[in-house]
Length: 526
Image 1: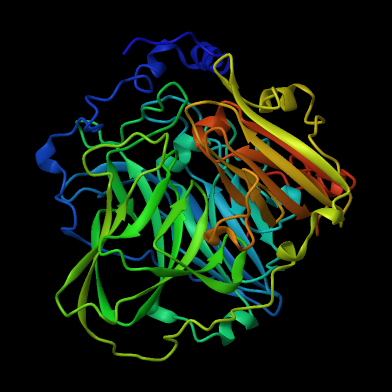
Image 2: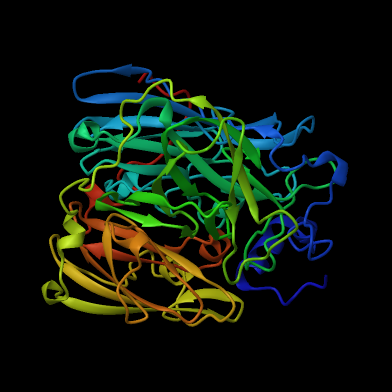
């Protein structure tokens, strides 16, 4: 495949790394049916690998006010394909990383140590990192700001308030201009926040409350991950992973299960359905519980979106199997087996019948869902386009923010203000999942119509399809300072579909790059 004209960001890469570093990113796929270059015999047949769940991280210590955790971002060689050794980057040497459990009202402190190599072994860039706890209203200096980078050999303590409703969050790298590569290498994991309201519900808990982290990758001939972001359009792998395992099979009891579904792919959207057409219930969105469950037969999920769904396997005969399939979304590149996700097989009757219901009322409406357009102090428009090989918001990029010494902002509400934002996707040929940091919002309308059933809960990412216009409504706070807005196709974010807004004042105590900078050396005991 011939190389297109170099964008500004690519010129920078060439000047720093040399042209050899560009050879791998611009390799084309072999055909429309496969992306990997590894021998087909080394790819497992779908549904032959067992399902696994990431381990739960144990605190280093706890006191009355906080739980303290430590994570090391490190290179290791792991096994994604059976019998194939693949170089990866993981939190504590795991892909996905370990799940962190937290309780509302008790703070969490997470030490992140960047022990990655000085340069990426193939692409040649310096793997600085910035950890974002996606879905938490953190202070700006702990939010994973794109200019707050920890270099290899540095560490930083991130403080999370856990001052919001129960929800499924995830932590992932946000290192400026290399977020896509770092997440693709494995720097992603879930974070579960619970509160008294959720704990009191009779919904599935314990081993019936299951993380489901979706991803897709391609493999080079030597078993390493093959990087091809299609001239910054997005990475589309031909191997679908669930919790880091290719097309796994999960043994399930004949009862209800709750799945915390996260799309951690770099660019692939999914339209999920059960192969037998069975409906399932959506009980929570990005920002936590819906007021009432919503029954659906398929679920569209863009990158970084989270949906908690309950699937009932009570009627599945012992030994029988059903599959979770991907019906595909517009503007995704599909291969032979990207229509498959995972399989469920009934192992026998339920061994525990407690917490096996979905009540008709789950919670009081989330605050974001009580907002009305009349409350909005301002209406703002975000126009998403590709201009001169760069991804832009209102014709501007993160490079413009950097060149303004991080002063340029899209909006400047006060704490407590409500605004209505209208997001237009005019970049033909792509969809954009738009993430707004800090806040939960209501999807007010989609192309002039009410939000579909699956979006009738608080969100922090909204799927904006080709030529769609989506309106969102939000109240700003509780923190003040500067926060990012960006597309969660991570290649788009890196090149450079990201801007920022400012809530209230910006001062030294909340400066995202200087208030809590990373440090070199041996960190003190937590």
